[in-house]
Length: 242
Image (cartoon, rainbow, N blue to C red; front, side, top):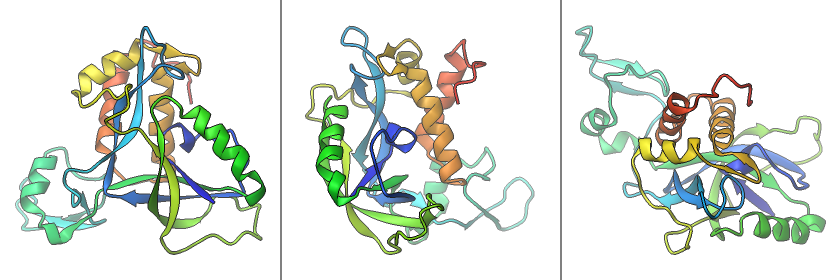
């Protein structure tokens, strides 16, 4: 059995697993739209954590390299890789100049964990409790990228083709669903929230740092915008949280 992590499970796997690998699922986006009253906040002051939301535009991502007009230097076209786009290239600009045929399905990157058969019941009971604040199990297709992150376990064979696994997501019907909000309001909630698992800011910093490490060059627009806004507001960003 495999389980996909896209939030704290990316860096905090507090359960036994055989192997793990980086990859993505399609058709969803990662959003800080779920209140947390048991990990990064409390009932009287909820924090905010991520959930998965079905993308309103399933073709919102772009291929690894694509041509766009280089208006600054006057040359007709130049090729950019993810994470290297100049600041003048906004998402609206990309929507206008990159044809839908050059776009890939919306993607959420994270980590898939392989659970041994003898541990499945224990791990799923553990995760059901850990994710009890509004999350439910959903089956999705995972697209593996690269080798397993356990080089010391050479005997384990990991998939190279897409396969089905379980992910926990909080849909709009759960009572802790916060819904859409602007980035500044999300950041304001995060910098003032603390729960049993620690400061809400720590959750943001660790998730953003982990995703840059595990999926370099993949631009998670919402995640990194929230991180940037939180750092602007957080008076303790000089702390070594990572």
